[in-house]
Length: 185
Ligand SMILES: Cc1cc2nc3c(=O)[nH]c(=O)nc-3n(C[C@H](O)[C@H](O)[C@H](O)COP(=O)(O)O)c2cc1C
Image (cartoon, rainbow, N blue to C red; front, side, top):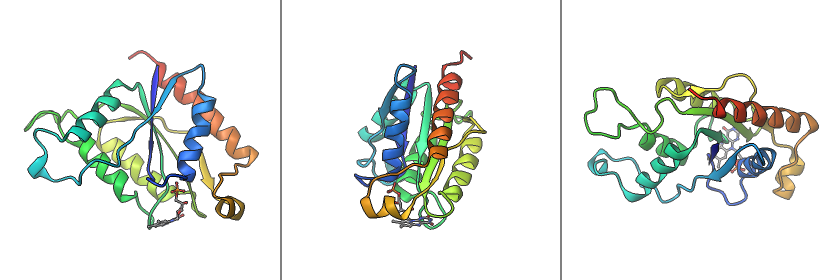
């Protein structure tokens, strides 16, 4: 069973990446976890959509190979960060030109959402990601969602510090998502 982590921040020391790394440890023995690299994906431009650029083809293959996708994202100005939105815009597009069914790499894909951010714990980005998941006919695991409000200590040390409650929710989300992603259709 495979889970693909998608991080909404390109920052090397991203708190959301650190959160995903902790979640990956919690998934040990339950799932094979990988992280999607997507910083080389060009801006969405319908002039270059078919055939898809190599970086997009590779991202679609990684999504296709995954039983579930776990997105960890901050919010930028109350919204989905641009690089992540660009990736999702590419992934949202039909695999075949003019497909009336609009089957994309995301159709039917299981997904869960988490985020670390300021006071709102990136809730605006997650709300929009949840709407996107519905629009893309993904299977969004609702309920448990780890939402971390970053502390001044985390910002000062650039190291993610989780409360006991954050850890409990993250572990619970990991367990539930491993079970959800592992369910046979
Ligand atoms: C362009 C930009 C916009 C931001 N807007 C918000 C925001 O609306 N809400 C928020 O809580 N934090 C906001 N932040 C702060 C981020 O939450 C913070 O930089 C966080 O560390 C980013 O996540 P990362 O550590 O995973 O890269 C913003 C940061 C940037 C760079």
